[in-house]
Length: 329
Image 1: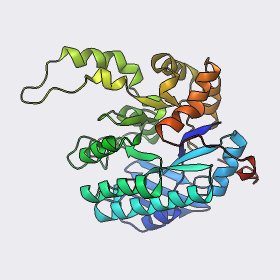
Image 2 (image 1 turned 120 degrees about the vertical axis):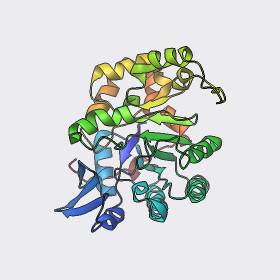
Image 3 (image 1 turned 60 degrees about the vertical axis):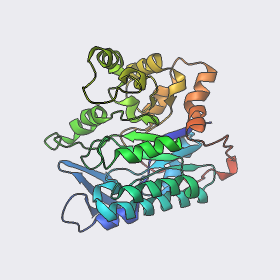
Image 4 (image 1 turned 30 degrees about the horizontal axis):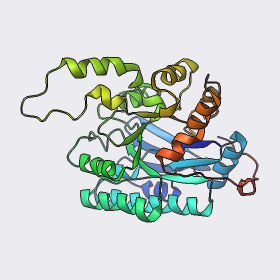
């Protein structure tokens, strides 16, 4: 079985809502899709398969992927701020739950959080877990420029930790990056901005950004620097937090993927493609060429996702798979 925990689907209703706004995020129609202006200097084109469930299913069938855990791409609803952010997060969560229900065994969903109002965001988190049955939460590496330990963000993450919910930590444009070229922002600044904030089940996107590469350095300095006077000592050192980190396998070179496999082990890696961004077939090909055992292969490709996202032993009936012709992307 193969579960893709990093697969994007955009809400067309949300992109339509962004049309006509006079400040980012905005969107404009573009032929068969949209161009979303996510941040100063960063615009992304959106066309099928990221706009179409049927096109997504066709690509999954072609790649041999049984189940995809869907997440919304940039811009996320949190970028609207205030009540609009909370309203649209809930609406997109309803869309994801309906898609999963309409295609049993093929889709699960990473829930969205608006962070417009703390109490409302926490209530939405509980609704996603208790009523909608979503797999966990997509949390951006910053929330509209606010770091994850911001007083308006951190209590939500603590609540997710208390609930034992999984978090897929995904990069977002950080403040001060507006002067970067889009390729530099996506290829360098995004993985650098992926960071570890607290102690829930965190699956860091794109091979964990720079965290696996700096594991020893972070562990060393977490012991070498004395605690800040007046603050309680941390429950664990930074190095110990890194030892609890999970990553997805979205990478574009064999050496980085093999390094993470050697550093973290198969038990802390989850298969992902970032479909349809970049070249989603490449992360899949590289993952399948890792020098793992059969047991480790089953862990990475499905077992870890089933355990951490509480997906259970999902059995996919071959008759439920799409028979549509593969779509481009």
